[in-house]
Image (tube, rainbow, N blue to C red):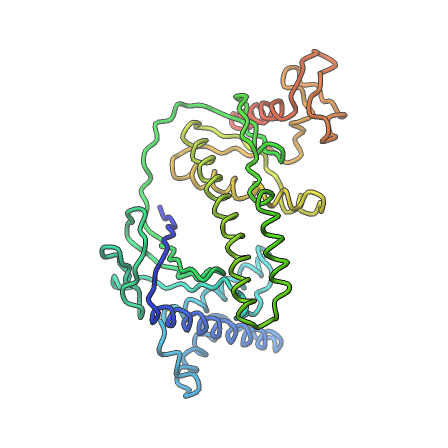
Length: 365
């Protein structure tokens, strides 16, 4: 299996300069390739990777673009492969049409491939093409490195994301099955009766974030003070993201370790975000990322993830007798009593039991 591992990097001043130049060159090649393909499409010629690769060779021979020879050639070629992949995703309706990259985007990255063991870890340093040995903070051992993405964040920190061979540890399963009902008030309620609170990282930092953004709006565009304030705003966002990711990683790992079968709702989060009253809260709680973590960890350790259909009325159905109470469709109804069997239900707990029952029914079908 393959796994992505992210380490903090501490390049020297010279290495930072070369990384920044490589980012600029990769952006240039991507934009030149995009312009070439758009021009070809208008003329009815679907020029692909071969045409843009020839363009790169031609540019390197020109005196005005001699600086392209100073950076990692594999990274430049990878930019064109990324462009080709972006077009394929667009034609197959998996993504929007590729757009030109801007140097004003403060989150930049480029990828290079391991060829002839030119990328390897020695001690606390990572050897990279053109850059040489870059100091890193390694938090775990790694297998064979296939490729590396060098990333510069809006807070001017540098990271390396290694794509490595991965052999997951064996988890002794207890054979447990669990249903999960996610929400906004509570992060999720499960069929065992346990509740995990919503940490609300964004909401807790909102006042600080708003204050820093107001200060940023007062700074003169293009000034050093504005750039310094931009970093402060980015640091607040970075902390929120790190807190959220840490929480999601711990909760998803806990569920995978304790349960063999996990039943979840197949939520259409993109459609739910169209509700402007709840969009901020839904984005903050990050259900999609949580479900993605459950899915790839299930593949690692041999667990089963069952997605219950979106339109299944898990909250409205009595988990005891199966009666469907349409009045519970209103989100303000948190507790209700079944008019048939007179069982008193907690909305979220009842939904998690129904999700589990429906998931196991789908599994056995």
